[in-house]
Image 1 (cartoon, rainbow, N blue to C red):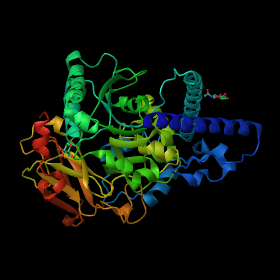
Image 2: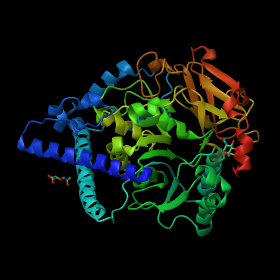
Image 3: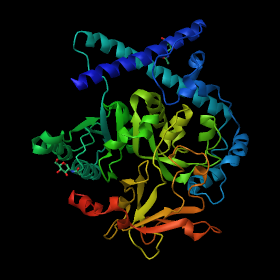
Length: 490
Ligand SMILES: *[C@@H]1O[C@H](CO)[C@@H](O)[C@H](O)[C@H]1NC(C)=O
Ligand SMILES: *[C@@H]1O[C@H](CO)[C@@H](O)[C@H](O)[C@H]1NC(C)=O
């Protein structure tokens, strides 16, 4: 009963959104003034409070002034100093050498924005057509269910990623997480045995008595449509398509190597989720003044860490447009991924372009790993926290590149100043948040093995980096045993 009511409610909300959008367009064309509100509360209500401004809002970013490279860098340097800041040094110096970012003309920026706006129009039109035909079907009871409910989305195709997904799901199950899980792969990518390996998780769960007690986990393997590995899409480009094509409305996207420390469902009840319907997590690298992203989104550089996309909470109802823009960046990755760090910063970029706010963790990410001779080295995992600053995700993104000795998770390296002020989180750049992590440098080294070293820049107090034992945090204790126990492979 409840889910049926939710289906109808969500379908109604989507119809209202689409039809109000179409009526703005109609009014816009006819030059009528608008009146009335659609009654939907939007996270960025500031943009939506003036009904008469609505027609322009949809593609407002196209109108933002386009700065030349020099103008932009001049403006951006005021908010994003490079001194003592851990920006993406390799990428930035490479583009200074090749002048690739400098050569992005203002015409190019305008074209990019226009093309994005057109893509949004096209997607909006397609959705409207689909909804119209589905609601006709629904009228006689044969309609497909609208996207509803909460769920977890992953992408896994090759054997190693399937094994990671399995460990990830077993952990979730051990926390009594009841969210359904959809795993996307490219057409023909996943082997028969690997597919069974994942589907088995779902079957086992259905048979177990746990399921009767608390719903259990269901795992569905799906093929990402319209994307092919090796052509326009590389393995990591499947992310935006997977989120887009999943059947959920409130989505937790997880990289297979971003493991949970507890049941993540409480975040869907958090104030931070309710405030924005979009939660993103930071990477180690900070925004840089020369990056074309600022010219593209038409904003001054934010003194903020770039996003990483190992875990994303997103509401489809509120942020369908963010998903479309992220998807567009993926399709046109040759144009955009060079300055979005691959896809890792593409969701933050899409939110900025569309003037949308997000929330996230209450502290910066830490580097976790093994004990090596250099006490600040040995990092292979990004440790990410919840809005309260309690560690939640063990994003083990480097362990696949080297053979580490156990214990794999023994140390944590973090910035001493890593807490967002008051109740604010990642996504809020007001002082003192803009100064978090200043003086802290993170470098990848290749000796004795590929791993990270967190240290301070010359002239900064060494106390800016804190080294702690993994077990000094209650929420981290016992993770390694659980991980291996659930088939973690290293
Ligand atoms: C979307 O639909 C509107 C109205 O039917 C039309 O004017 C517009 O050209 C369409 N846009 C795209 C990109 O198809
Ligand atoms: C999961 O549910 C079982 C059965 O109700 C309970 O014994 C167990 O403590 C729960 N585990 C967690 C992590 O909540």
